[in-house]
Amino acid sequence: MVTMATRDGGSIAVTRVGDEMDFHVRDREGRTVATVTRGAREGARLLALARLVVARRTPLPVS
Image 1 (cartoon, rainbow, N blue to C red):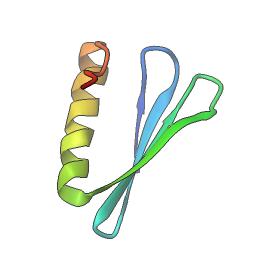
Image 2 (image 1 turned 90 degrees about the horizontal axis):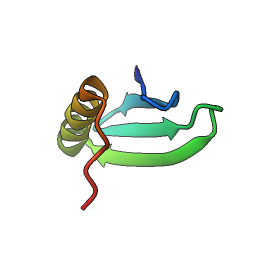
Image 3 (image 1 turned 180 degrees about the horizontal axis):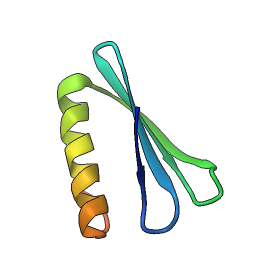
C-alpha cells in the first residue's frame, strides 16, 4: 500500500489487489470521500497523476 498526504490534511491510499488498484481518498478527519477501483494500467496512470498533484500541491484537474 502507498499512502500520500494531501495539502488539506487528508490522504490518498492506494492498494494493489491482483490486476486492480484500489484508491481511497480520505478527508482530514479520516472519513472516506471517494473509493475508486481501476485496472492496473489505468491505476498506474492515476497513481502517477496523484503523486504529481501532491508533489506540486496543485488541485487535481477535473474533466
